[in-house]
Image 1 (cartoon, rainbow, N blue to C red):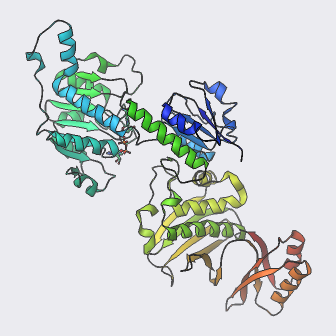
Image 2 (image 1 turned 30 degrees about the vertical axis):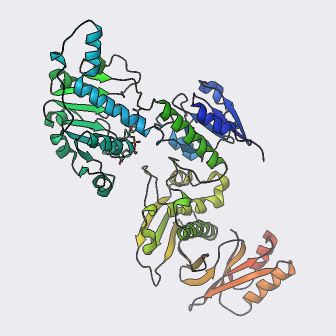
Image 3 (image 1 turned 135 degrees about the horizontal axis):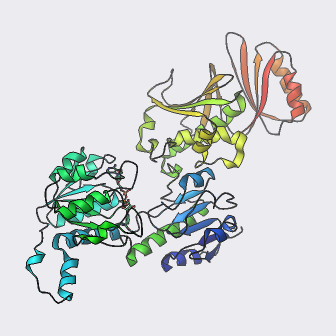
Length: 540
Ligand code: NAD
């Protein structure tokens, strides 16, 4: 096995580097601060690149990705990585969002306390030779209402700490289950407007998205109580900077704590000019423990991914196959194989690809979309798209790139869940429409844990979609099958299995599994048999 080559383009904690260096199959190169011009010609020589925010991974940088399979970010934010470009190239993008959760949580608490007691100003004043105790009349946190917007890892950890201060904690996060907040004694509001009217302090812990950009503006601040405290340790721009400035200046807001800015480093930013806005230079993650945490997590997961073991925190894979139950994994494999089979049988250009999951077993959470992009489908759909496209595009298709490639080809992808379909309770159904025809393929997994294709349109059979098959469609008349057998025999092709299905109106289709490859000449002979409508060699 040739060694895995990993390039580190930033300063990451020694503990993470040590994990990589300790692996005898890994060659680590450290080039902190390398410029994109120097990186582009060599990036394809590496299996993985690990960075922090120092390298901006653009589409251009990874245009020729060579052997690059993973981009790892020792940290949370991926603003510096073009995730779509990486996905199109089948490159896994992963981060380490849990490593610095507590670091960011504790900075939030620090800014909250600093703002409530104006600690930095008091420090400044005393050091300037003043003894002005009246000026630093603070606000007590006990019994105050804290509103947390974004109740993920950091938001919920802030809640735990705030409760120990005796604060009443309420939260707004439309994407989490109510029970998660309730289990921490936090009331989850459905309406942000209602929450902002009730808070004494408010803190933001959402990602920066179209929805959260400028989610707090003047009209929102106006609805808050006078003397509110606002904290943003998440991402610059969640709270409108100009409106925050005006609100602090006017005294509507008692004080604010800001670790993150729309433009970083901030240039001519008015927030830096007011005494009652306490600012830090995006240091939320900057603790020794936090940096060690992200470096260790990214090193371990990059290695796991390179070795083909299960890993976490890939942001452009909407699911992990290993998270599916054993049984659903068999359905996942069946969907991919059945789509491969379908792609080889169906004629014309695919226009619509519809994946229908039938039965109660597909109700598990893991079957839902978990990834927030327009092309995020549930795992079975992605397996299906991959199988469908792989026949033509070969290894350029991966679970990561599949949905983007389908979009590029103008294939409309549809998903559906049903309780029953026809006479079946457990089924994956692929409906494929091309510019020429439409076909429906159905498959299931029986108790023996083996996935089988059980129908194509109205033809029912039992085919395990693995290996080489001769597939043919013929008029149901005597002699056709015998002739096929003779031709295969004449070419020393051994028949391993035979599955036939026919319809009353006189057509039949058959799958003949064979031990040896079937060449074009053999296929031509088969196509010439009287009564043969179509014949194909399927490689699955
Ligand atoms: P997380 O993914 O665990 O939680 C984010 C939460 O925001 C999720 O529960 C999500 O449902 C919620 N959310 C998304 N859109 C929302 C909306 N429109 N309204 C309300 N809630 C919404 O992330 P996390 O690890 O808790 O990080 C939170 C933020 O903190 C991220 O933006 C992250 O980049 C930032 N962060 C900053 C620093 C720093 O140095 N200041 C360090 C770490 C993390």
